[in-house]
Image (cartoon, rainbow, N blue to C red):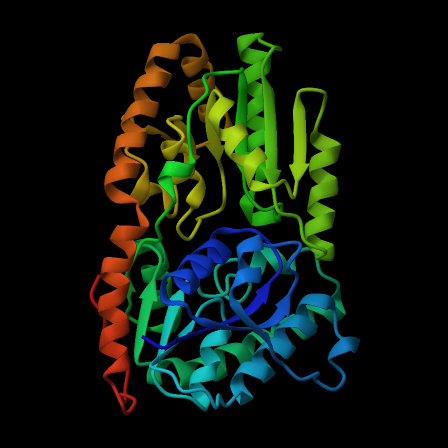
Length: 388
C-alpha cells in the first residue's frame, strides 16, 4: 500500500498526532505537513519521510493568528496537486481533506469536524473583539461553503468515535465508518498510589481543566484531606488563546494544584502509574485518549458524562461518569476512602484496554477501508455512505 498522509500541522503531542504517527509507521507512509516542529511533537517523526509543503498566502499575516492559520491551511490543501505515485491519500485534521479538490482516492480519517466552526462556535466567539468576530464569522461561512462541495466527492470517510460520526452527520450530512484509534497498552503500567489525581490533556479551553480544579478544591474542602494533589499535564502551544487559558489556570491553582506543560512521554507514563485516579472534563470530547490511557495504567477514571468517554468508560466497572464538579468531588472522596474499589476498577480497566483498544484492532478495520479506496480508480459521485 503506497500511502500518503496529509496533515496541516505537526507541532504538539496529542491524540491526533499519535494516530498519524502509528499509521505512518505501519504503512511506511510519506507525510506532508504545512507546519512541523520536531522538538514539540513525537520524536519518532524524525525517522519518517516528512515533507514540508505550502505557499504563503498574501495578506494572511495581517489577520489574527488562528484566522491566518486557517486561511493558509485551506488555501494550500485546496490548491495542492500531488505528483507522487500513490494508492491512497489519507487526510486527517480539517481542512486537509480539501486535497480532494485536485486529487483522487482520498480517505478522510476525521478526528472531529472543526469545532470552532460548529458546536463550539458561539463559545469561541465570546472572547473575541468586534473585528475578530467579523473575520472569524466570515471564514466560518467560507469553510462551510467549500467543505460542502468537497466532502461529497471523498472516496471514503472514517471517524474516530460514534460521537464524531454523529457530528459529521449533523453538521456536514456525511456518513462515516467508525474506527476507534488504538493505544500502545503495554507501554502503560501501575506503580501504586502516591495520593494525587491526574489528567493529561492539552491546555486549551474546551479541555476544561478549570472544571477539574473546581472539583478538586471541593474534594479537599469536603473530605478535609489536604495531603492529596492534583497534577495537570499536557501540551501547550504558542496560540494566544491557549496561553490566556493557561494563565487562568495558574490563577486558580494553589500549592496542591500542579501544572506541567509539555512533559516527555517517560514522565507522562510515570505520572499515570503513580496516581490515585485519572480525571477528565473535556467538553463533548470527540474520542478521548485519556480514559483509555487511565485504564491501560490500571487506574480508575472519573469523567464528565458526555462525548467519547461515554463510549469507552464502563460506568461503575472501569470508572465513573459524572454530571458536575460536585459529583466528581464525591466520587474522588469515595475512591480515596475505598482503595480496594479503586484497585478493582483499575484491574477491570486494564482488561478492557487489552481487549478492545489495541492498534491491532484498529488496523484490521483501517486496512479494509484503505483497500476499498485504493481500488476506486475514479471518484464516486454524490454523498459518501459508510457503516458504523
